[in-house]
Amino acid sequence: MRQVQGPMEDFKALLQSWWPVRGLRNIFCTYLCLPAPPVLETSDMGDIERGCDGESPGCVTWSAQASPGNSSGTSVEPPNGFVSPALSLITLDDEISQALTFDLYGRALNVKSRVYMLPADDAEFARQDRLHDLIEELGSADCEDELEEALRETPGVQKAVLDIGHGSGRWMLDVALKYSHVDVVGIDLVPPPVTCKDGRCPSIGLHYIHPTCRHMPSNCRTEVDDVNSEMHHFENSFNVVHARFVAAGITDYRRLIDTMTRMLLPGGVIDIMEAELVIYDAKMRPIPTSRSALARWLTLVVTVIRQLGGEPDAAAHLAEWVALHEDYEQVAVHEWWVQTSPWSLGRDMESQRRNAHGIGMRDNLLALLFSARPMLLHAGVSELLLAFMEGEARAELLAAEKPSYIRLLRAQACKVTL
Ligand SMILES: C[S@@+](CC[C@H](N)C(=O)[O-])C[C@H]1O[C@@H](n2cnc3c(N)ncnc32)[C@H](O)[C@@H]1O
Image 1: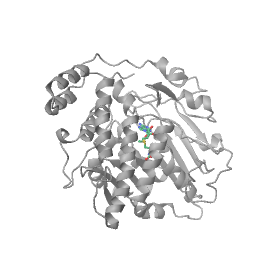
Image 2: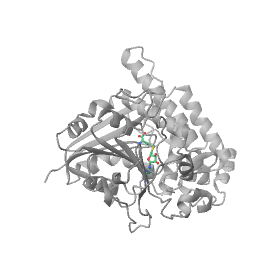
Image 3: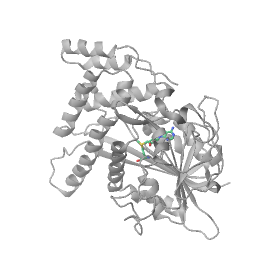
Image 4: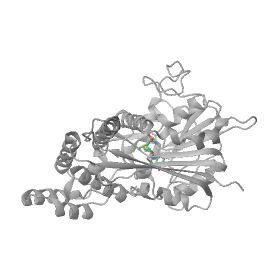
């Protein structure tokens, strides 16, 4: 089990550089010097991590119609020590779902990874759903021609898609409904929240998930596993491999791209999207932490994610990593500059549209303030300091006075055919 080492020297230096009130600065810096946070014991984390007895393995597969034939193999233990024991196929019930999470500061977190420490609960799934909707509104669907092509129905050929880090499952489920001839597999540290298990739901017949349900189509199944492990059982299996907003849980993103490449069939499409955890001004320059409470809080988040072993800076490198990869051709990179709040004063249609996106991103960030709490508290940030920083960041978001943006990046490419 990984232990998070406190205190956070980088962040203290940052605080010391901007804190305007000397007395307050000293008080809060003292709070940062709290002893190392509690080490999570495996006993806090439910049965799955404790006893892999074959009946309750760490790697769990769930499908709408569970059938052992669905599973093709297992992940194995790589040299870095992440253990992913033999896969078995089980039907996921509430008890097993609960055993895959544990409580940390009132939120449910996955038991499998101490790198990824955002919650896996209804509030976080709702945040992911809303962010998915925002991405659709940004026009992300317009860059899915490559996916359409790769998934086109071809007589005698069973097409397949893998979604890495499916989270609430919106992308994966939308794809499964839209391409009913395609096998869709999701992988995550926790199973997706699924309702309508009996299939009676308002999404049937639609090409999207109806807001009142989360239906698991029969062409979709998921596995619980850590993609930082080796994933040999998925090699050479998919026409599309997708990953979105997973960087916080990835120890080596370039290695993930290599893993995804091996999972793809020749001619298959890699599709990755990440958000830069940086706040930009109207001239697209990073806003210094001395000038934005949101930037200060986000810098704290980045510091802790890095400390836990994730890759919070991956977004900025996606294009380069895919473009320079020898196994890819037809590389396409898309970027979106999204307002962090509805600050635009323009009355024209475009300003209104950008403000609507700003509302979506603001609400996402407000929810993220709440979701990142357990991770930050666990890393040793004091409640008092965190409440102060969150309050400042929330006020800045709600005031919507400063022009500021977050950048989203998406890279797609085709794996070369031999
Ligand atoms: C921020 S959510 C994004 C969910 C979804 N991809 C979306 O765009 O809405 C990140 C998801 O990636 C999963 N994840 C992070 N690191 C992972 C890892 N090493 N292996 C498997 N899943 C991981 C998390 O459990 C979480 O569900």
